[in-house]
Amino acid sequence: MIEVLLLGRYLPHEHIVAGLAAALRAGAMTADAVALETRKAAQAETEPDLAGRPLLGETLENRLYPMAAVSAHTLTG
Image (cartoon, rainbow, N blue to C red; front, side, top):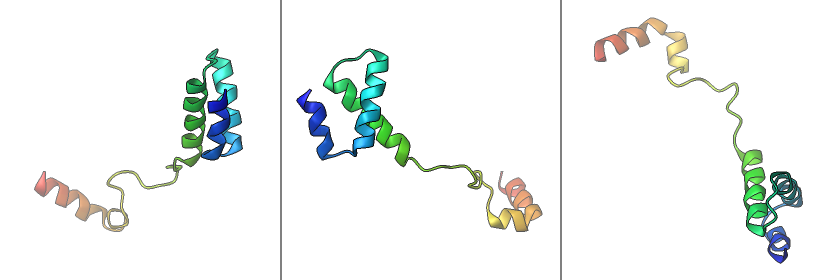
């Protein structure tokens, strides 16, 4: 388990603890499983929250001029 301790050089303590817990729940008792789960925990925390962002094609221009967007789409599509 020295490899797990070495993860502390690169990843925060909270992520390592989360990775250990997830690996134990899965029954995987290898350093590779702990490293994988640790990286998953780190990635889940750093992924951007997309809630509240405009949907694809929903821009300020389309909100202000909805008919222009529809007619431009119909003419080009």
